[in-house]
Image 1 (tube, helix red, strand yellow):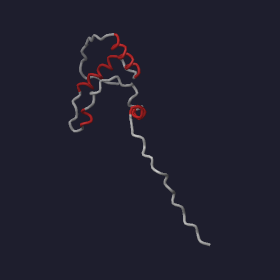
Image 2: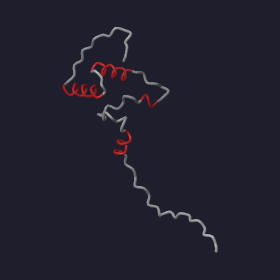
Image 3: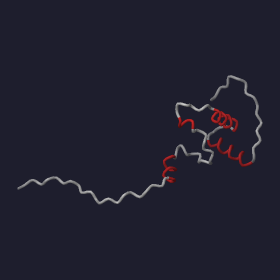
Image 4: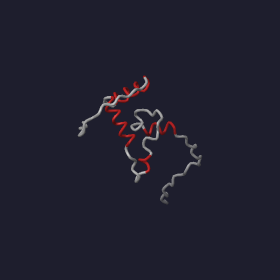
Length: 103
């Protein structure tokens, strides 16, 4: 639960039907109200980048429609998009056997 120290001001925003549907779906999946989702987006977009960490400065640069579970299923999505060369065909390695005792 977030407690606001200052008085909140109303904000009216006009969005088209598709954006409204995405906002409702996104906020519902996370158990948030639309207002909470919009406040979180404002904070994320206006948060100053930490110059000490260049990776964090990239936050918010991806505007594609990413799946909602991308952070939970990162490995699966990476595997689906990763294109690797076929492994080299090396000969079978012989396993070193133990020396047999002489009789």
